[in-house]
Amino acid sequence: MISIAENLEKAATRIRSAAEEAERDPAGVQLLAVSKTKPAELLREAAEAGQKAFGENYIQEALDKIEALSDLPDLEWHFIGPLQSNKTRPVAEHFSWVHSIDRTKVARRLSEQRPEGMAPLNLCIQVNIDDEPTKSGVRPEEVPGLAQELNGLEGCRLRGLMAIPDPANPAAVQRERFRELAGLLAEVRRGVDNGVLDTLSMGMSGDLEAAIAEGATIVRLGTALFGPRDYEAQ
Image (cartoon, rainbow, N blue to C red; front, side, top):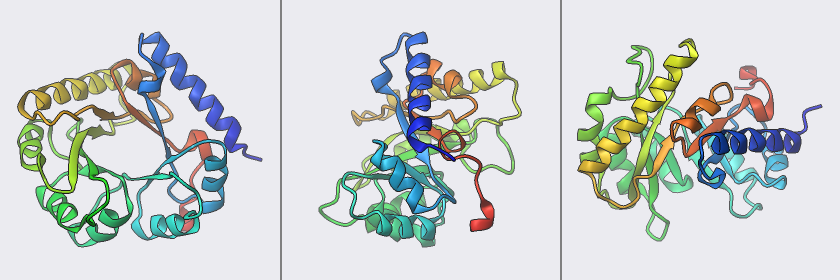
């Protein structure tokens, strides 16, 4: 029997230990619970144990969960999957973050569709840090130009960068990729001065320690919290 509360505590301990090892404040690292394919009941259990931020990849599945959990206050929904320009409206209307921006067109549609009165939608540019042909995201050299185009979009705030290094990389290469992303964010900051470029969304269940050592501010954990994913449920 999976105990979500116990898994959250174990994750918090890992994050705290990694941050302290890197001489960082553990409060500067947010745990994002990646809940794709998991039923709303498990998310409710996590929320009751104190987890507030949830990451979803599939729009309709996420909307169903948002509705099912609408009685819970202060949940924060992050969209972390590929986003097509014709599917942006529900994301603009229901999410607080989008981690997977790789085109100006998508960001502009989110900006146009963000309802008045809602807080700005936080955006991260997804970077294909290993230049994998099958993976989403922009190449590192394209990031500064895209950041310039996204900065200042009404209803949105460019917050930082997201990447998923190839899990087949050796540990030393994984850490180097995280270091490269941190350096890329520093480069973007030199060209975009919006006061809130503070986010590195990187690190998952298998490599969060290396990511935190290189400056991660959001780590995305799924299996470590909820167990293996059941894609048959899709």
